[in-house]
Length: 326
Image (cartoon, rainbow, N blue to C red; front, side, top):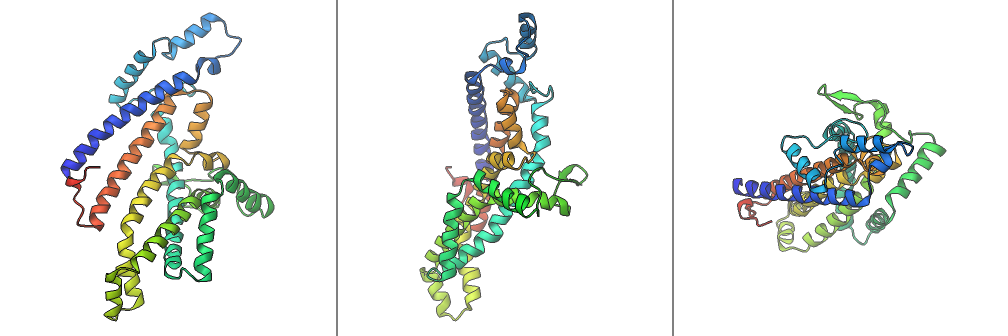
């Protein structure tokens, strides 16, 4: 275990360095932030003063080395637009994105696994076929279109739910603002969480269905039935437990994807999370915020993957993390 964690940590450092370099080069190639941040009517002296204040008068390699020196001390730079810590802005928006991603994943798990299990146990029934048809829609419908339709139906036509924003928040542990602790917060959360959950709901349905269908054909299930075990015990112990390993892996990886790619949902519902901040920062080429966002997301992915590997070994004792080459 210790060897695995050390190796994964060294790999993570390399990944973070490569990502930061790619983002620096990419933003530099897209355009000059000064053209957006400075008033077009400013004279040359004002432009040069602003360029020097932002550190953009240095060559790209020098800017990157300056960033690395700051990153080693936990400083990922100062936002060009907000004149405050880029990492601080990310962490300020992180609770909103994490809450949205957790709610979306909870919806996908609570609905996806039972529905997929049902479709796998009754593949030829009307319910099983309907569930699989619905999962195809979950894969096919664009996220932004589904979000707009949800707003049209439940906000505009029915007036049941608010169309944007996070609503009132309550301090969890006295420091983390969350919406789910109030009824009004849930009213703001339910639509964007459902919209974000659709793809993962469809994915878990199909994955669970395929695993259950395959498990029912295995000898250990046939032997359990031959021993006279109840159908509930066969499904709960012998079928569900054996298909949980790939499901847990996918849930972990997709949770990271939910956090990193909730941008569309946050934009459609004006949810004040990290994705919305990234879109706004890209619009003004706020390089420190863009770099800080991507590095935070990469770090989250790394931690989630490590947790998934540990859970994988707990579910399947045959797996030995110290021998894992991934």
